[in-house]
Image (cartoon, rainbow, N blue to C red; front, top):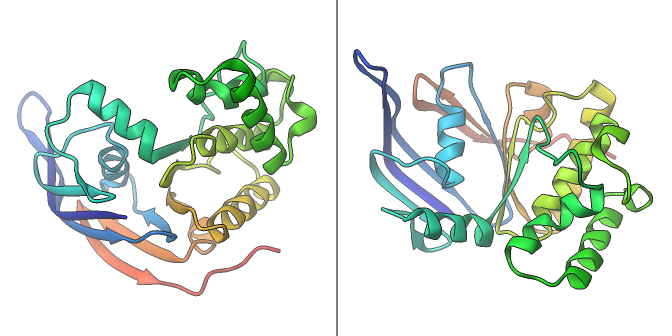
Length: 230
């Protein structure tokens, strides 16, 4: 599904260059459920941004579903993000003045799907995450867990190859974290590839593979016995 070889990334701090990723090698196959862990400054968010085609590498190779991700225009990068990737963020990133249904349908608007079709599909995905009855509510009328379910439905609606979840439970209490991770496990069991960036060991234990970064390199990469949530 994705292949990264000898990937490097630095940032210019003004006085010097900060070498964030120092030769990352990573292969993730279709249907995997992977957590990327590491302390602040380890490079995990930078790696996720490069996988998500939100940032560019300095050197190395990145291949996504057989396509080299290299020297893309912003239009082509946006096209690939829309075609291959769904994003879930810690802060939900819902549009405050749009209903749950409208937020979920939004990616289809950018794909020029007509309103009737995108609303029907958005309702289908709200049903999938258990929020059909909240379709006409605004984000400020939803709990944190409900907002994250809306965000997950929005990420799924274009049927992406990979779901990228950046600290998806970071703003949630423990009970809601359980519910969101169970939902992600259910989605993974249906065959969807999921990559989660997290600093929480309990969340990582609910995936199938733990990749741990330290100082810009992969310190360990292990398949684990997943804690399945019932």
